Image (tube, rainbow, N blue to C red; front, side, top):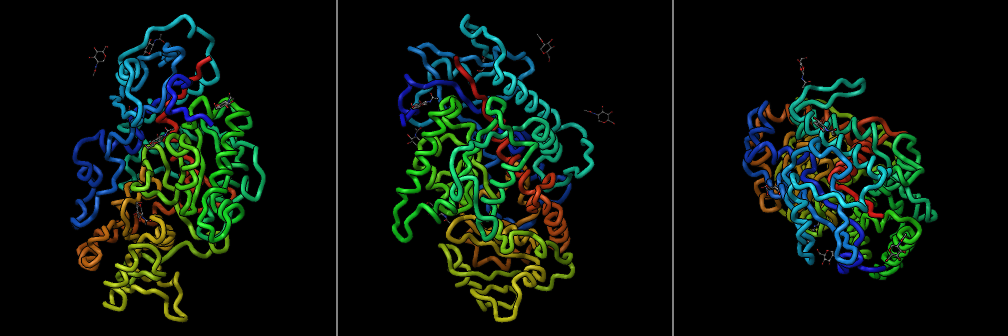
Length: 512
Ligand SMILES: *[C@@H]1O[C@H](CO)[C@@H](O)[C@H](O)[C@H]1NC(C)=O
Ligand SMILES: *[C@@H]1O[C@H](CO)[C@@H](O)[C@H](O)[C@H]1NC(C)=O
Ligand SMILES: *[C@@H]1O[C@H](CO)[C@@H](O)[C@H](O)[C@H]1NC(C)=O
Ligand SMILES: *[C@@H]1O[C@H](CO)[C@@H](O)[C@H](O)[C@H]1NC(C)=O
Ligand SMILES: *[C@@H]1O[C@H](CO)[C@@H](O)[C@H](O)[C@H]1NC(C)=O
Ligand SMILES: *[C@@H]1O[C@H](CO)[C@@H](O)[C@H](O)[C@H]1NC(C)=O
């Protein structure tokens, strides 16, 4: 397949990300000192050792990206807003990051200034296309979300997001309701099980199968008419690719990459949508560690598409503004029955708990410092016989969640399910739903260098503060629950909402 990004004369279309990650971007919108705002209802967290290294949501530049542009014999075909009432466009201040090898051209630079309206060309005077209407709907959603930031709470029969667990509860709520109102996903029908339209629903990769089945069954969000879709789903499971396509112990990613390349070529040849956006309104999911590697087979899949990854490692190319952090949930029985719930803060006698193998670079450090060193720090490689893992989670105030072979750990959601405050020990990890959730209000982040100080850090959290954090863990739990069929505000809807936010960042143009 042609490498579009490197051949500007064949580029078909202008696509750019308007500012934002609307809901997350609030942090940066609201000023240079997010923590005072985030915690304005409470004293700021007392410990200073929290890493804020990976707080992507406060990096304004991450929200902006000029992807590609159309040229027709040098002539730009840009219809930025010519069909909309431009004065209703949210007045975002747009900056642009160029894809590395592309110098901005004059018109692109101008486009980054929202008050510039390109002159309408006769060839652009055409009827509203379905895409124009879709984009107009998104424009309205953006404006509504922006207005909601400082507006009133909206009623909701099931649940009203409220509290410091959210970056901005009103904006999230509005965005969520807008998603329910309009968001449509087209699932490509090409491809056969077991690799396509299928995935594991048990084990640590369970979210791959759960998401694929939920979106395929969804009457609300799935559309069979690709013209009406906001995003296009590539329905393969990386865990299944590893199981059925990868040759065991071969260390050869070739067959997986070829399968994915062939698939993208098929849908790019058969439908106009991939080429139209260079893949930017397409997404795939992967909980397997090799999720990021899989996208390396198709440059536009890696650079442009929305990659929903458990392995959300920013030092391996995960881009928080474009990609989505996928929660890793270990469903041993395929259901959350029996693993939800735990006692309140006062009935948790143990300070901290961890049990797990020496996977990856961080756990050896943790075990070296804390295994069998301190009665308050229950850090084990293997649990003693007869001790229940879930009982330990329920008895502990803090549950340690160090990265393993990949940055995500199923322990984060296990902690949330059992009402234990998660302690994230990772480098370059973007936790799930960071676009909406203010993780610092209900979890503790500890950098790898601070592992020796772990106990001091945990003890420095006052019991008042702990009680608040623990309650918030219980409150955000609904966003991580897996239901079949899905329930509003559960993990399926939150993942979809993250994709929706990424799509809101884009404007897709159709040039005919
Ligand atoms: C994708 O991004 C990488 C690194 O940013 C760059 O080297 C490569 O040329 C890009 N490829 C395309 C097709 O845009
Ligand atoms: C455009 O929107 C503004 C404000 O929303 C409104 O005052 C104006 O009448 C609109 N213009 C047209 C042509 O619809
Ligand atoms: C945006 O463009 C307008 C008209 O081209 C110009 O007057 C204005 O100074 C520009 N603003 C910025 C921030 O560049
Ligand atoms: C918020 O609610 C108050 C009282 O109900 C009302 O007066 C006000 O107009 C509302 N504001 C917005 C932006 O809807
Ligand atoms: C999309 O681009 C590829 C690569 O240039 C081309 O082979 C394919 O035919 C195009 N698809 C459509 C639907 O035009
Ligand atoms: C994250 O990516 C970096 C760079 O490739 C790597 O060194 C690190 O081990 C990764 N983290 C995990 C937990 O895999």
